[in-house]
Image (cartoon, rainbow, N blue to C red; front, top):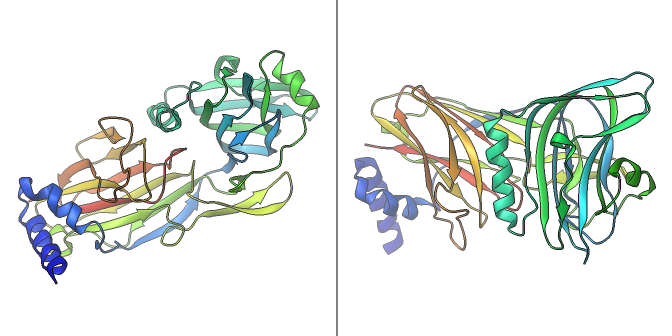
Length: 350
């Protein structure tokens, strides 16, 4: 009974828009927010996911499949050996004519022992954009997909993670490989075998790289109060299903890592609306992009520090405050090493 009264008071405090009450009201309502109805559709090109084995203990091919047209690669690997290694991303053209590659977005971390920091760093680069480049893959040859053909050395227990959007005008073989510290990656990869997946089985190829979510009706702060949109829980927001091209097993992307969400929430009514980000699965570190009528900007989640959500379900980051009647766009992608699900929370600001 005491908890019910507390929650009721929290809801009333949120609707009054008292600034000092905001953190308390959000925390008190964290477990009882109603889910806002959305429609979901898939879009984008092919999605290639390489995260199993997440930690490799020998050199080998971490994942490999064929790509053509628009594609996204997301990879996330830790050097589990006692020696320095490298993680190389290679495109091979087995055809008779040269292939043209256009890289549209690119975010690859530096080798890092802080896995959350690495996952957060690539999102900053990816969402900023501004790193397009072109490659040509001659017939019967290979090239590195890494920017400026750099394959950094990975010390033991360090991670390399990346997210790359690109387009190929011809079929190519995409390979993510763990290789030695020395030697030409394009030569070394020819002698490698495919490593078995680890647990969980987080690697595979999926037909669509993007997920579009649209509010089924306009949100009215005066009528609807505080609500949430859940992302990456596997139920309200299902996980992508695909296949592991190295063994033909069906797989799920548990967490939808590397998938880019584009969430559109139209609103109506009067007053101001606030949108918050709430990690629900544990520690979380990332970036996203928010667009309203007044601005389009990147927001750190969290804005201060590397991560939040550690041993609590009631951490929040303010993403935007805007007028009712405007639409809110949120572009989001689950970062490597972070925990899912997360929620977007809409509530009256006054």
